[in-house]
Amino acid sequence: MPYVTRNEATAARIIGGVGALFALFEGVYILLLVLEADQANRFFVFIKSWAEPLALFFPGLFHTGNGTIDIILNYGLAAIFWLVVTGFIARMVAR
Image (cartoon, rainbow, N blue to C red; front, side):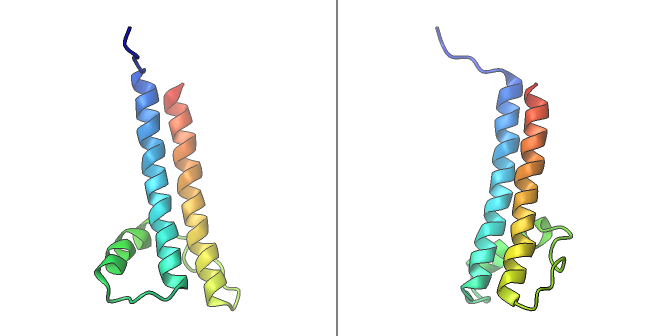
């Protein structure tokens, strides 16, 4: 007998995957900024083009006086936000 999944579970996995992808963009962008990657690099520009809009209102939220900590806090919160929100939506869809 073949394994059959419910459509709700599949949709929930897709939603969770999208949230994880968004968080991954934020995480890679944090690493690129903290490690001072070449901002003219095409990969950097591609990641930035996704990470900046996905960060929503979080950039500039914290000003600690340390640029590295500011980047980690602001973009890290955006990544956590996407994981939490899409996780919540996925659980609601799976019910």
